[in-house]
Image (cartoon, rainbow over all chains, first blue to last red; front, side, top):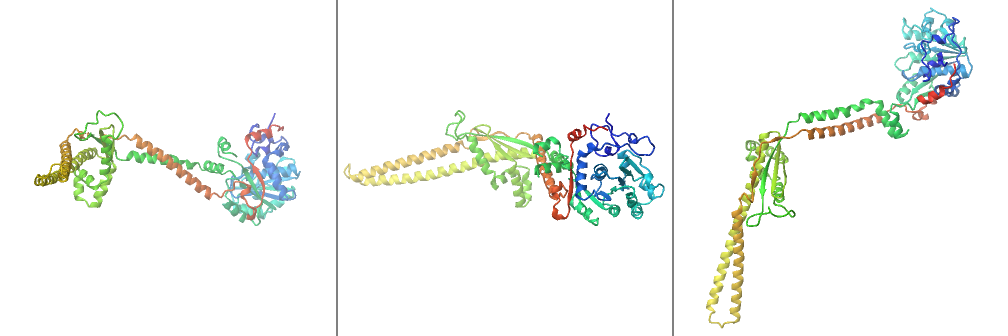
Amino acid sequence: MKEPNGITACLPPPPNLTPHPNGASAVDGSGTGRMRPVDAAPWRSFEIVAACRSALGQIGGEQAASFGVTSAHRGEGRTTLALASALVQSQDYGRQTILLELDLERPVLAARLGIKAQPGLGELLRGESNVEDCIQFVDDRLGVVVAGDTGGPSLTVLASKVIGANLVASLQKRSEVVVADLPPLLGSDFGSRLTQALDRVALVVRSSVTPLPEVRRAVSKLPETPPLIVNDVGASKTPAWLSSLVGR
Amino acid sequence: MNVKRNYLEMFFRHRWLVIPLVLVPLVAVGVAFNQPRHYVSTTDIWSDASIPNGSTIEQTAGGPSPSSGQQALLDELLVTHQFLLAVAERTPLAHYVETHPRQQVDRALTTMANEITSQTPGPQVLSVAVKDTSPTMARAIAHAVGSEFVSEEVNKLTSRDQAVMSFQQKQMSAILQALSSTQGIGGSNAQSAAGSAAQVTMMASSTALAQEYANAQQKYDEAQADLAGVGNPSVLGLIDGAGPAQRVGRSKSLLLAGVGGVLGGLALMTLLLAFLMARDKTVWGPADIKPESGLVVVAAVERVDAAQERASFSEVKV
């Protein structure tokens, strides 16, 4: 029987698989919170994973100790591409990978992966949990640190704590690479501050949605010009029959 | 890059662009609906060949008809200030004409003339229609146009015939005088031998003068006959005075407003679309990010359609 798994369920779901009910089925019964190993091989042909493989290859992602994915605005495919990058790191490169959710404003990873929403980064920064408790493994080589409960201190304070506590460095000690799902760069300084904790950052640009001046504004918030990943190329709101009528 | 497709894509991304296409026709129809109602009144003028010519009633079709001649004449008169003023003076506009400056009167007369139309339902009948927002005014103007047209033509023809008669009368008097002096000369030369050259010349002159006299007499008689026929209702006259004005249906104007509104809305929508396209700065694809901008695209994720996804994942075994 075909059954979805945790990591792939957060990527655009294949239509012939039933949606993941609540994530519990992906957790093994050992009580460690570790998830069943997943066969990610079929996903290697998936467009998003292939694009991330190509992008990581071009920017030396195989050697990077930390890698972040950000965008100018929300809704550009940032989290999806961060997940795909984590999958490439763990499955293709065989590296011990930790996927870190740094979008503390609107955390979605727990829900999308069907894993526990707490403990996570919030609890870790408040000293309520230790690092090991916060890492939820979805397979042998891929762990996830979700945002957790981010209530209490302001996001700016939390961002300072992430940088001040050398959180990324701490996670790097427990893995070979940390892949961060960063918040968007525009709208607050929160996103650009968090990039300081990472070796490499890629900027996702959603085709037909993000204006080029916004991309430039977002880039200007970073110390270095990041490589761009153009997402959703060819996405269209035009009805298919009309598109085919005027030619693609 | 497919420009048509990009325009379509922009349209489907901004579906509010359809609003002008809906709103403009609605406004146009609303405005047309709220316009004052119009009324039309018609009057019919009978016209036939002048007396003593034969009537055209029994003539077969073909050739210029009396009514088309009258229509051309009416169209000519309707561009003259004097005729329009005479028409206005026969209507409730008379007071306006008297109390307003020339410029305003001229404007009013032009407006009135623009609402007067004519057609020839047959070879003898000229139908004049007048449209106005007031049924009373429409009827009054229609009646005034008919009456003034007939009156104007009768006056013109009468004065012309009278002038012809007066001229021919003078011609005849002059010919008679010349004839009597020719005959006087003839008497004094009576002793000349019959058949002499002088006598032959005199006879020829007398004959020519008699012929000229006969011609003048004929033209005089024709003008007299014409004058007798002028004003005869069987030649020119109103056969149907202006009846009560009928309300003009709105369906045509509403339809025109609707069609115009759709075209206007379409034009506005196209303009807005062109404006959006001109202002569009979104990244449509990796090609839009030029290397000289300093930005480097390392990967592009194509949109995966559902069929492709199904094919990719049909082999998944967990």
